[in-house]
Length: 172
View 1 (cartoon, rainbow, N blue to C red):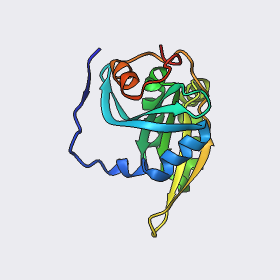
View 2 (view 1 turned 90 degrees about the vertical axis):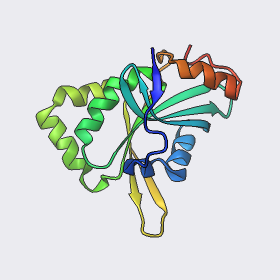
View 3 (view 1 turned 60 degrees about the horizontal axis):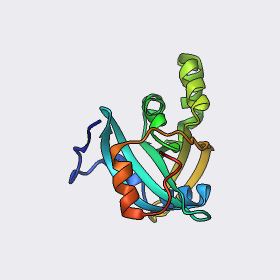
View 4 (view 1 turned 90 degrees about the horizontal axis):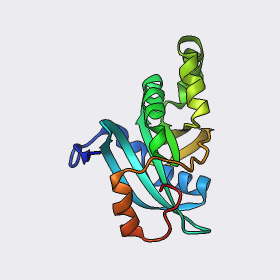
């Protein structure tokens, strides 16, 4: 499997959704500390907006969180998240489209009920972010992502294991 980062050095507008507020929110949700963030990697020809490598606070186990960042096209985000879910212990769509999430889910129910069912079955989570003018963000959990023990290992996992140390049993 070839993994590569083709976006290094480029500014991607949606990247602003992954910030200290959303990272802290995920850390609190899963009682962990983010120790490494990789952005815009291709794994098996599928782009991952971000990979968060975390260490649990209680046992020091490594967890891998996949992130899909989307501002508007939530249906596309769901398709991408479902396709990529198997590589991660947790997976979240992070969006600032809080003002029309209800409408987006209604469209999924009407137009793509199987996709919505797959999102729920595969436990793809969703976090909505409100960005205030003063620079602060507020995060809301729309759907949780449940732990997936048998996440498919990717090459980067071994490098990160060496980088952070600790036990890695959750993704091997």
